[in-house]
Length: 212
Image (cartoon, rainbow, N blue to C red; front, side, top):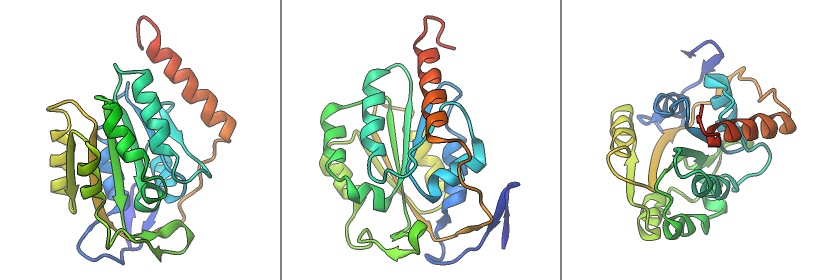
């Protein structure tokens, strides 16, 4: 296996040649600023975000698949002066496809929507999803996102993340990732109430006059 920071070991496999999800998450987190908000979907994505960089400005959508993009949209409209990152998998995006045209219609200029597409429901046993036959990037374009980019490796992902800062959003980045489960990765140790309360406190702090 390949060492993954200080929190586990990745077992590469699945979609050969694609960037592994944990690496894609690390790259996305590298572009999340101190005053940005990040929301991640239930399952392995939140666990990997938590293990990589747990912070008060993270909201882990534990146990509620498909809802994170709608919550991210609401937050982006509520706090237009702060960037909001939404990170979910293809299964989550497919579960609430109606959120994509709603995001396009509402035009949240500060929203960065990242879909990590491994064409599987990895958290429940890697059952195949339909994203191998349905283009989420094409749906994003039809839904009216300001920019839509698809990435399959670290270089194109970095380019997409840099490009989203050059013009207003909403931005959609679909990252085709391999299935690479991380052995020994822990679950999010915060309770749902703790996740809610500390995230709320961070939002209130960002909305304060000094915005710290």
